[in-house]
Length: 252
View 1 (spheres, rainbow, N blue to C red):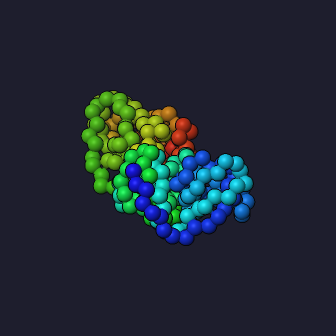
View 2: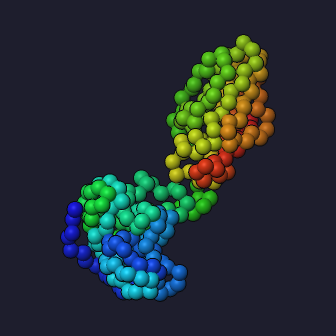
View 3: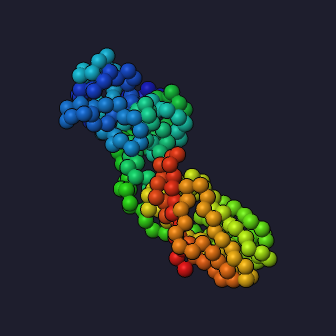
């Protein structure tokens, strides 16, 4: 645990509620004159509370620029970008910031675990957040051909997004189910509404191969490929945990 001296620019600010723990991240409060303890990485971070208070409306010192001690809410390695957790404590930020509204707070100058107090160089939004709808391009990756057995199958999220090229030689009509929308969203870290991916399926015999929607997935256009190939594009329509939804559209 570090308690090194902090240095930088600080100001006095009223708090919207009692500040029970010093060295927690703060975010703008209900009006121009107040600050609140941050409660997550989707809030802008404006500094670190240096002192505690016992009631709303009292004044606390806030470090708004420079190097400040910060309480950790999880394991952090020096050099990592940090963000706020639900308690205003520092946690490692995502490795990149495509999620809508993600805010970072600074760079850890020391390593530590939950409960430690470390020095953080305050650099709010060093990784710029991407606004909703900011990522809409097709997800492009190196593709591999997945040779499917002559049987019904479920195309996993890893196959649909990471491989994306399927071929099957059926001896009778076969169904190929997609993975669930929840699994598809989980396979694309940081995805948001409008994030897309593509895959193709080639049927190498004169039998119908039908794409079947998994839970949370909606199919648009013909889902049947017969002695031909079909190209499909998936679009995330809801990225919220527990409510994930993906629409898959036949493109060719």
